[in-house]
Length: 114
Image: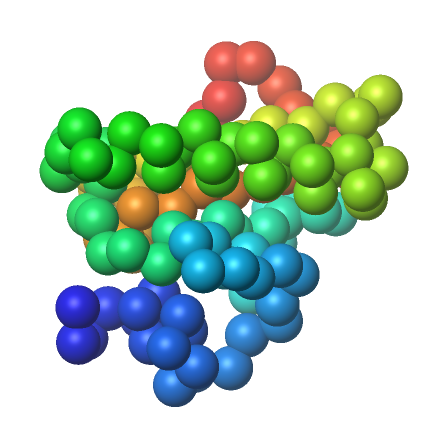
């Protein structure tokens, strides 16, 4: 999508602090972190949220979760715990309408969230 801020970050039009990148996923530091570790896992394919996913995109979520787990382990949070969150719609806190996952760690994460 031409005007999507995450698509612009993925294309390199807006700078970001990259943590990981391959042909399917870009992982960056969140500009407004809510935990000591707060990363955004951005699939490179533009999909609004899980409501817009098609069967051809089923592997997208699994790959993002597995990659997020590997990064959490690499950063030292496997034993202390971490959270991966995906919001759907403005009422759930989605502010950028490009599917993405938040990886949060480094502080107590209460339940239920929000």
